[in-house]
Length: 386
Ligand SMILES: Cc1ncc(COP(=O)(O)O)c(C=O)c1O
Image (cartoon, rainbow, N blue to C red; front, top):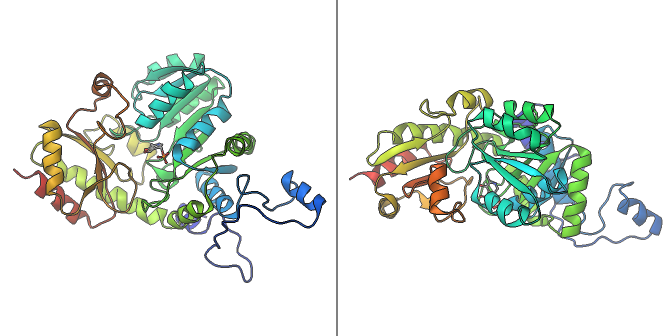
């Protein structure tokens, strides 16, 4: 099966009289009439569910679907993308090690590394994603390598294939946050990564109406991640799993429209008033252009960013003139939204740290939706016109 068909069918096993759309099962607990039967289900020897924190049919369907799309043996759905990241990191590196992480990361990930992992004894070595020699020097001392397929917010594309080869050569696990690309546009496990995670809140869910995460990888590591997630209670609610699976069914068509629209907007934006720089991996001016062409041949998804002259005041002026676009501190929904990393995704960084990453007071991140491309371009052109 190809990815578009997998997106529609993955994770379910239809039989005669099965509901075509899955039933929602909010039950916290299932009843049993036989102690041996309960024991066998609890041990995982027989299929079934017994307690909602351990497993649930809606969560299981989502896990299977994402695992299939990512080409993984198994998946684990969690209460948020951050829970997925935390659980995946601890499954791959349960004891303090040096984590080599790309310097450009989602601000929440940076906060997790600094405020939770560093105090627990992990060391973090941040490297520039575009400097493969720096990665090569850092990997031998690492116990885990962490990267995003497309970085947040400036949309650089690390050479995941090269990084995976370096990590593999040294036996170091490599975890990829594939939130921005989704498994439709990139399958990091095929490129050699050990594990992949998503904020399902974004493109997989796709409708800005749920918070969820998922991890996919080999059955043994996912088993360890699942046990920890059950112990710490980070499992996903049935309703959010049900909604996420409903979103996932249209992921392929949405990602293709997001990709076309973001490239159209990025191209048009280069000529708009006040725009100093446009960040999109498939613009020829992007430092990631060659890598993106190779790793994201079918499109780079809906994320892009731009730097506006005039900083925060200019951003506010643009916002107040939008007729279609809205400000929202998330991404990946069907509607076009902007975010202002200085006070949203990257607020936990100091101004100097943001400047070092290239995030300026004029940097705006755009999650380009699936509306008509001309309408999106026109709204930005109108909002930025002098
Ligand atoms: C790339 C990336 N990873 C992880 C997360 C965290 O996901 P969640 O908000 O679902 O916990 C986000 C959220 O913005 C993100 O953009």
